[in-house]
Image (cartoon, rainbow, N blue to C red):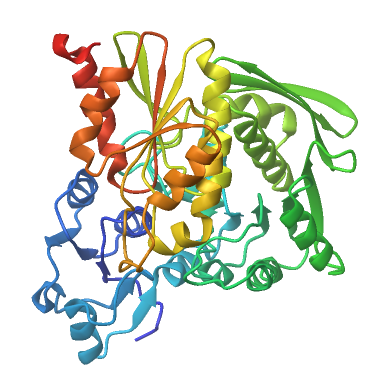
Length: 466
C-alpha cells in the first residue's frame, strides 16, 4: 500500500478548517472518505451529504475496516485512540499537508504563505479565477460564504492552496507560483526565533519548481529579508509587490470608501485601478499580491483586476454579522498584534464619527506569553476594549500567563479596557455601552466568534439599550 494511498482515507478531526476541505475534495474525486470529529457541526453535515462516513467522538471502532490510511493534522496527539488503532493495523499515517500535496499533483499549483493574510489572499484568487471561468481547485483555511466552501474540486488546471507555516508543513508543497505576504515571528510553540522562521520560509521557497515564480512583499521587512536570502537562485523569478519604489508591481494609491477601497497599481508601466470589496489597506495589498500571482500563471491583468472585486469576504475576516439599533457588529479572526492593528485601522476608517468597541479573546498561552504586550498596544486603536480569558485551544495553561498581560498593556496606552471572565457576560456589557453609529468588533481565533449574534439579540431587546 502506497503511503499516499488516498482511496479510502480516515480523517481524525475531519471537521477542522483544513481537514474538512481535503475530505471534501477527496469525496468529490470518488474516494471512500471516513472520519471523526469531537462534535456535530454544519461542516460535518456538509461532508455527510457528500457521502462521507463521519462519527462523533474518538474511538478505535470508528476506523473502518477498509481504510487505506489515517490522515492527521499537527493537533492530533499520539494517544488518540483512532491513531493508535490505525498504527496497530499497519495503516499509513499521512499528515494533512502530505495529503494536500498529493491532491496538487498534476495541477498548476499556487501556494499562498505568510504570517498574516493567507486565507484572504487564497480566497481572493479562488473567487476571481472562478469568476473568469477557470474553475480552479482550491483548499482554504476558512469558508468563503457557507459551510463547505473552504474547498473545491475544479475542472481547471490551477490548484490554489493556503500554505501553513505554523508547523512547517508548507515545506511539503512544490508550487509553480508561491506567494509570501509577510514574515514575522509567531507560533512560538514551534519556532524559537526569527532565525528558525527564515529557515522555514527559505525551505518553502526552495520547493518552488524550477522556472517558477515567487511573489513577495516589497514593503514588509521580514519579506524583504527573505527575498535577499533567496535572490541568488538562478531558476526562480521574483516578483515584488507593494508601495516601495522598487516594487515590480507598485501600489500607487489605496483610497478607502467605507467598507470598500479602490486600489491603483502600476503594472508594466501602466496604471490599473480596481475595487476591493473589503475595507483596509492590508486587504488592498492582499488583492495586489493575488493579482501578481494570477499574472504569473498567465492570466491577463486587465481581466483579473476587475474579477478580484467579486471577492466579498471570508467568514471571520471582518465579517459583518448584522446591525441593530444603529450598531454594526463585525467579527474578526485577528489574533496576532499585526492582524489586530490592521483590522482595527480598517474598522476605524469605516466607523466615521462612531466609536470602535472591541471584544478580544487572546489565543494560546504561548502566544500571549510572547506577544501579550504587543496585543495590548494594538488594541489601543479601539475606543473601548473588553478582554476575555485566554482561549487555550491545544495548549495547557502556563503559570503566570493570563489575559491580564494584554489588559495591562492596553491600559498603559490610555485605552478604556474592561475584563469579562466569561463569554456570557459580554452581550449585556456591550449592549449597555454601545450607541447608534458605533461599531462592535469581536476578535480572536477562538469561540469569541459566537458572540456576534448574541450581542445583536441583546441590542435588539428593549431593555438592552442604555
